[in-house]
Amino acid sequence: MADKINILLANPRGFCAGVDRAIQIVEEALMQYGKPIYVRHEVVHNQHVINDLKTKGAVFIEDLNDVPKGAHVIFSAHGISKAIREEAKLRELISIDATCPLVSKVHVEVNKMLNQNMDIIMIGHQDHPEVEGTMGQIEEHHTNRKMYLIETIEDVSSLVADHPDKLAYVTQTTLSMDDTRAMIDALKIKYPNIQGPKSDDICYATQNRQDAVKEITGLCDLIIIVGSHNSSNSNRLKELALREGVESYMIDHEDSLQPSWLLNKKNIGISAGASAPEISVKNILNKIEALTKATITELPGIKESIIFKLPKI
Ligand code: SF4
Image 1: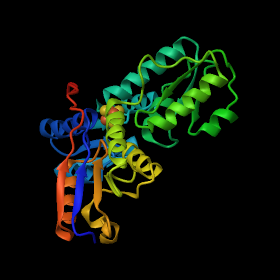
Image 2: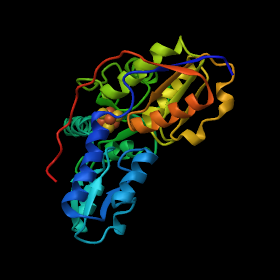
Image 3: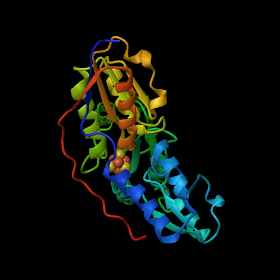
Image 4: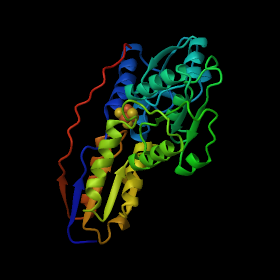
């Protein structure tokens, strides 16, 4: 190992306002109604958070049939389709919505565009719950309307839209800013009349964390991203570092850190996705410190002051 390792902590990193709010909603519901509280899907994509909430009495389910009639069910920060909302009503469940307000904003945009007889192209990742929720805003009464999902720039070329002059696009909130920009540019060339959202759908937290990692790529010979495998914005941070030519790994527990990664490294950057708690960063730092002589520098970065109010629980 190098004699002395410098650790650069990117800022901002870790929890965003939507994740904070979603966790608080589960904790508040447990306090008010006692356990168990059912949560549809992982409320945020982080194993540490999920394990902690499980020990407090949250029960995570994927299928609403697993929730007893009349029980409370919380919808995750990623948002839900209209069909799931309706199914919960039919099963007489008491719904509490932890959808991030920035995802709800995209749902409002989609509904507005559909009601203006536009077809919608969603840029996002298939099978991600946010995409299922946003694509699921279309309903039977939107006759002749369509939503298309595209994931890559190649999908733009192969897309055949039924109404090329009545198109709008939205994006998943946690994508790579660079990839998305390229896809939007390609869409605008192919469909010159396409309409976009008033303000970017990629959220402030995704943008700030990507900017902060970009800042350190030139300084580091290794970047470790703290985040769980299914966290979209954490994956994008690792991809960004790799794309800039920096060795990078994403882990959500100190036990996954391989001492061999640290061999001959001088400057190690560390960041965390929007769903990763600071305790996981601390535990990983402690492990690196135990293995090396490391000095830690907390880098300056944009201060985030966004807070989302809790819904009525
Ligand atoms: S990453 Fe963005 S959209 Fe997702 S919960 Fe956080 S603030 Fe909301």
